[in-house]
Length: 462
Image 1 (cartoon, helix red, strand yellow):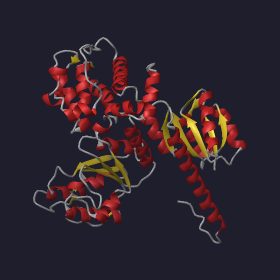
Image 2 (spheres, helix red, strand yellow):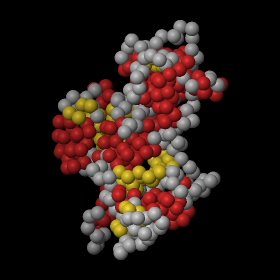
Image 3 (cartoon, helix red, strand yellow):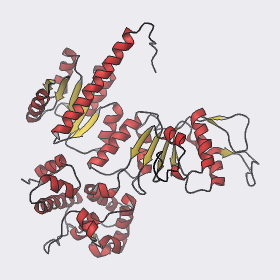
Image 4 (tube, one colour):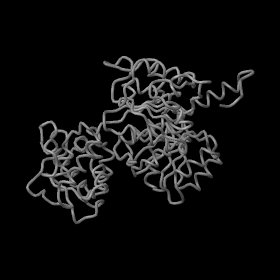
């Protein structure tokens, strides 16, 4: 069992976590703030794991995490905890080396499992250090548009972005068309040590293989008809930054072979040759909506290239699997239009639709509806026929049926208040539909049970 430091300024949370951790055999030190935590770490250097709240009365948890990893307790496994879904903080925490990032109110079983994993990891690290120290002659030498969402699937994506940002390893982003794969690539670049270097993107499905080779590798003067001058390719332009290869699953097999050689040798030549090969120093992030994993039906990548590109793999969830993010995405899309609100009937249709084109389709629908509505509020008739159509499958996947009294339009409210009112109403209806079964209500809403409990408390729902 491990020694756990709990840092939370809410007494009830500290006491509850202490009881739960002690009940499974852990030793616990509880502190209400950063000042006490520093003192505890100095007096108890054998602490294995820390549960650290993001927002504390005497400081910011992310800043304290930076201090921990820099000097105070670099080997301690830190689990960040917050009641607020914040993509930037999640990414920053994982980049700084947090073991995990969890949201309040806690799913206690899941939290205890996370603590157990952190304790096991710390035990393995200590064991490895012991082996190295005990081995004779051991080697001692060292080595836009933003993503939107507060759902559990998006929290997992933010964690993955944070971990990937702290590394230079190649990343493969997978997901359906329109889920935001390039946004993930840009977020990784922006949070990485290469953020001030170029981000160079190329859509591999947009060019014919004969043109793509010169586009990627560049060409020498006279290397083919029309090559009137030397031209730098995307690999060269990326320099020490990030090269984003979009739709890697569409890359011609012959070019896959050449790309694999570049990734292995970190050198390449322009089309038409040259005096000397050029060094390739960029980080590679690739993306695809096609099956590429070896063994998948219809996989389009060479197996060796897949393993070279997918050292880190991030799978983006389709919008239908994170319906609770739809109001946030609608609000974000509205900010780019002349409209300023969406009627309840229109929002229910947006929630019921399965969004085969994902976030990109939703953005286009809102922009089109704003242009067609002729006013400040997007109403149900302003939406495309396909979105308005309530198929049985779509209705089963969404919130609840409308009633004759559901004609309120929140056009007199600020957007934040309108979304909060709609959220409260959706939770009430889901609870009615599930006859008070909270697990079923959470399933209807497409959110985790702890998130439902938190939202019920926020809105004063018993």
